[in-house]
Image (cartoon, rainbow, N blue to C red; front, side):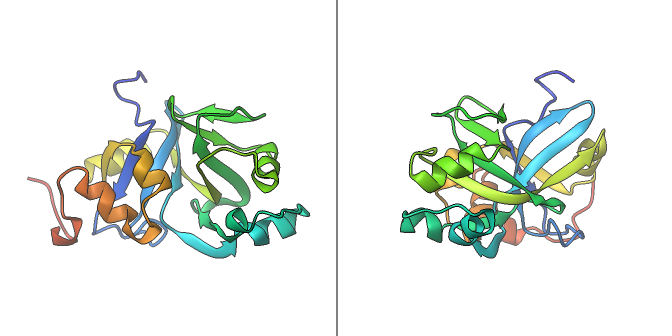
Length: 187
């Protein structure tokens, strides 16, 4: 797979007819996509757990009330016990995958420790679990009109309120997703 067919650094927008409840009305960032499959993080499914609760579960202390209030996202149905941190590209950590020049995905605990200490990445999103696709599965789902894709937007990933991310991602394509019939077919 070459860069022209890779969906890395693309936002994946679930079409209104998405039958899988794990992905209905979601927008995900594709962080890895190769001949073996794809990995993404859902960006608009906050859990009832916030960062303060996550820090307590991990035995980490913080005196940063702002970061403690930030919600943790349900990043996808696969590996819900695994943590992922999407963050801007200004700092490096132990186990980091560079999604783009501006976006990184870190799987190691050192980024969580840095966030608690107040010297983590400037912008970040913490998620439990991920979305995964087997080889060829994501391409097939796109051909079946299950997904739209658009280049990633730092504003949508880090700044847009969670409840607005799905529609904002579609609007970046000039589409009012609320006006699309849930049973759209192929011509």
